[in-house]
Amino acid sequence: MVRVRNVDVQALDPELLKALIGPQRAERFEQSAARARALLSGRRVINVNSTANGGGVAELLRTLLAYARGTGIDAQWLVIDADGGFFEITKRIHNRLYGAEGDGGPLGPAERARYDAVMRGNAPELPTLARGDIVILHDPQTAGLARAVRATGATVVWRCHVGRDVPNAFTAEGWDFVRPYVEDVDAFVFSRAEFAPSWVDRGSLHVIPPSIDPFSAKNQPLDADAVNGILQYVGLVGGRADPPNVPFFRRDGSPGWIERRVDLLHTGPPPPPQAPLVVQASRWDRIKDMAGVLRGFAEHLDGSDAHLALVGPAVHGVDDDPEAGPVLDDCVRVWRELPEALRARVHLACVPMQDPDEAAMVVNALQRHARVVTQKSLAEGFGLTVTEAMWKRRPIVASRVGGIVDQISDGEHGLLIDDPCDLDAFGRAVRRLLEDQPLADRLAHAAYQRAYEEFLGDRHLERYADLFGSVG
Image 1: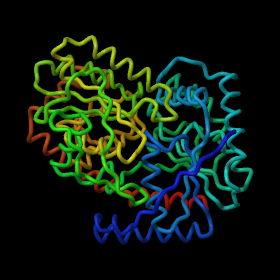
Image 2: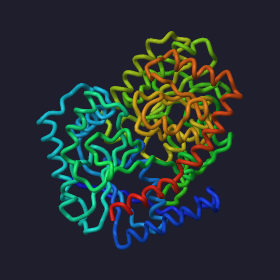
Image 3: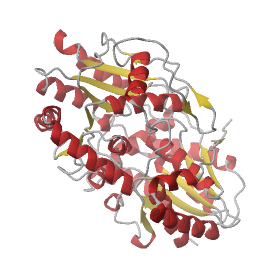
Image 4: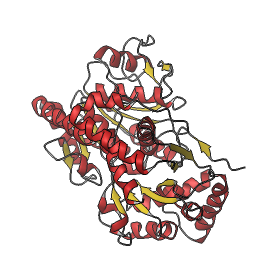
């Protein structure tokens, strides 16, 4: 039986954020919050997506809804119920919207019938909606609920987190599948204006880049001892393996402790604590090109003393991503083909996802320990991992694709690779940051400033207040 699941989100006191952003921004934030409360008086804002754990959308919703609730907005989060066959179809749509072939499978009548059947099963499980409620449907997985929601009199917003600046035949196929479900919604939200297809009415288009929560387990401050303690205990850095005395606080306010070790995949001992570490932490997704990062490191940093860590969630820890296992298998295959000495400097790891906040703490420590953070995506809606590294003052090498170009100006906040498939350029950029510490420090400092100014929760909620005003 289909069961739409409610995700509990504890309110975050906006005073925490106000203390960080200073009085001038805090006053503007309060004005936006007051405007949103007035606009939404007696109304609910209900977000619907496909998973509560793993991936950028789930992390985004935890942050955004916590602050929204803290400002007095009745914000809720629902997760649809679906099976592996449905997620194979929606992953195919995602890849097409990114302009990639993906698994090459069809998006024909049979796939549409399967998709529609899952949507019909979920629609009756949505809560009773009232006229004036605002329902924000996230990505292709929930697009098929738009008509059922509109029939209740509620306002429908579709937020798409993926896309490609320059359309191609694959994006056309993806949009052909999605368009019938969403073309008459009340408003569209994209992370980047260029992602919106030509048939989207520009009067109903809102551009809202995501944000991070500086107080979450993923981004909370950690000193060097805490970083080393966590990474040594979980097995990502060599050394002692005593449980670290580093608490974190979950969204419900309860304390947590690092208990689970990561799964290192046939890669031998972890890197020594003093070794320069290049890190890419992201989902095992073809678009993230983890195997390309591995190849680029192997081809161009063979003679260095640096190590590479490719780290993602346990492949069964993200409900809506059926590609994770095959992508991880590809990375293991590429690793096995390396010479033995080089294999010892490349590490593949899966982080357990039973406790998302615990997993976030591990990634937090890993990013802070990294000498260089990479995000060599083939396409990207918005790189949350990029903003996380910016916040942690890490030098970054990333692809000049999608939302990343709105986060990083090349040579100012990080180094961008014009062609993400250019392994020579990638390797040169990583080596440059490893060898030029003054440059790395300058970029890292500027990256932090940009994250502080543009990608914290107050900016995100201000833009949502504008959206709420536009849909009445």
